[in-house]
Image (cartoon, rainbow, N blue to C red; front, side, top):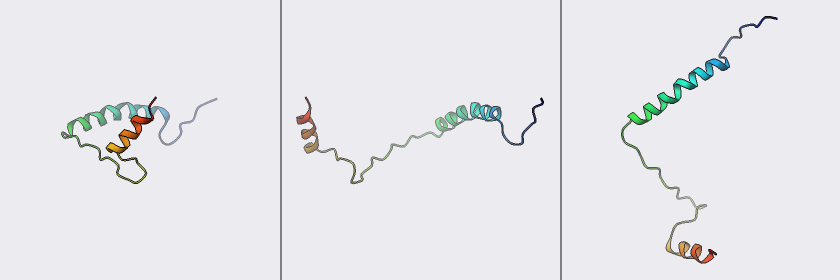
Length: 62
């Protein structure tokens, strides 16, 4: 039996690329300089953090 060479990327090629791409992505992210804070979601499905909701959560604790 002989193995035939398939056209396209192989599993080994993918692993080689993944091994070099991950450190490059980390280096690129660290060189960008300034980090941005994530924006808090303010949609209607999320419970708002207020004094009223904090008092309710404290009253329901055992």
